[in-house]
Image (cartoon, rainbow, N blue to C red; front, side, top):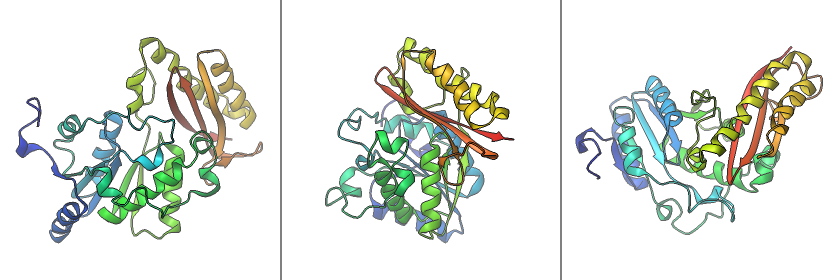
Length: 291
């Protein structure tokens, strides 16, 4: 451990093997504890910590996983570049998490990339699935593995990753995992930018440019009384006014299906957006009501 970490006795219990993690969970279940689980890829920020705080309200034992999953990165994506900050992550989890599971890739995939995959289906091929083919298959596969390893009573996810939240929730229902999912609202910096581990890649000018994403969502939400097309037009106008933002997708989806909302859709909906600012890809979303 580095010198600036809290005392060892204050840190969460750390395991890097499946056997060790399962033994730790069994012990706590033997004490009558419910288990809440927060899966992460590390590089923890305030958004992640809000998920862990929610977990603390839902169970006696909180387990956090830190694993950068290679299955959800494409050949041209930033797997090697993705930040790995285990010491800082452990320090941030003091007083919040009881157990941290931080396996290496050989522990999770001892025979190489697993041949057995959970398929994300039609929704997994849309939006982020277009720009990142196979991403959601890799995400659901590792989440299913982690659910099997931890066997939680409840798992906590962030609304910022709206498509992932939809797909994980559907997987839990379709495969009859004996657990529930809790979703925490997107955590934002004071300037409105959604917190993300990738925000650290933005320089000062790019960060200012990135504010076009939450501004577009706000404009779309303000136009909700006009219906789906009015929402899209208002949001796109904000993006189009910022030429340094390279739009990937912008749409309004039905939260029950995560498919594009019909022009006459009424009730809950979500505006979703993804774009590149410099070399950094950002996503965001906003829940709205179409009257």
